[in-house]
Length: 142
Image 1 (cartoon, rainbow, N blue to C red):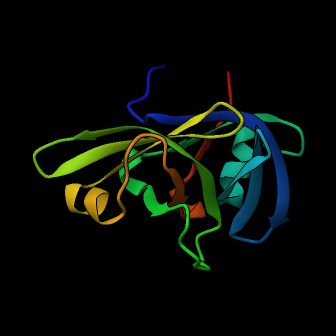
Image 2 (cartoon, helix red, strand yellow):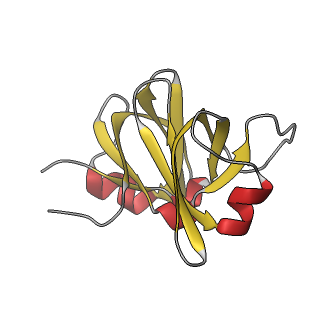
């Protein structure tokens, strides 16, 4: 299957908490980075996700926010991946920002050109990709 989601991370799952409705899953994507996903308990069971299972974490680029690397904020969004901008491509209204992670992965965000300017994003600067755990879709290989 091919998927339009550009942010596709392969990793190993750790089930942190299982509730009646939702499960909190952490995915080790390498390089010291983790992605947290909040999925339904039914999905956890249907997919057979348990500790150590290989999973894919998917995040749409439009769900990713970007902060400058020097921003001193505490956020409720648990997924905060720090890296360096490797590409800023402007469109008519929005631009595409790609951030290289220490483990070799890349996170792509679609943000406004105004935000690119306001955050002074350009190749080589440190940036943080931010997204909520509810924006993460988990999948397993067949």
